[in-house]
Image 1: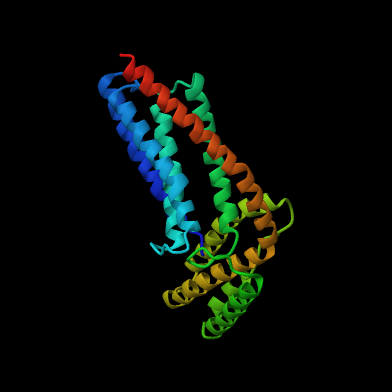
Image 2: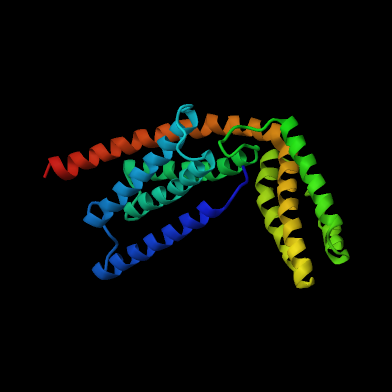
Length: 272
């Protein structure tokens, strides 16, 4: 399973649109929307529903052996999208007041989002099939060997300028240091590696650039598998530790959220 940032961009766009709507309502009424008002309630309800979907749907799909509704990669992207947009809407719902139980819910929400962001990079560091099944070390080695042969074939058919670019960019980052920092640092490495390819391809003619594009795709896949092979043991240990921390925080978040909702309904509705 190759990692994609599509869900992050979609979440960012959705949060930007929600922010624009929030600013419009704030400007129209010349005040910050109240948590107990119609708009504030709508933000809280929709945000909490998205958070419930985040907590339940992906876990259900991952544990259900009979369900075959979409690939696990797609469910993970949806999980990440709702896990960012939902808490953001709940944050706007607070009217920037964090007293009492509402403050505790907000604190748990921020912690769970931060934990989820870290968990995303740990989870995707473990090689998987499109259905989310972990790939064992032997299968990983076989895939790397197949990509090496493909690279040799493409390079042999390329012109001299393209082969020179491939030689300069046939590198991997260092893997020493704390396991978590290595996994998070891979994101920066991938960005820098794409920039290096972009710089090199500007110097090539159109035909050589097409060959370089093909080489870059295979290099990216091979380098991803190599890094995963080097860090797979540490990634699995980190993922187990992450689950041990993330799940109890999620339980605490939803327990306090349901108490908050019950109290809000009681004081704002039943006592009126």
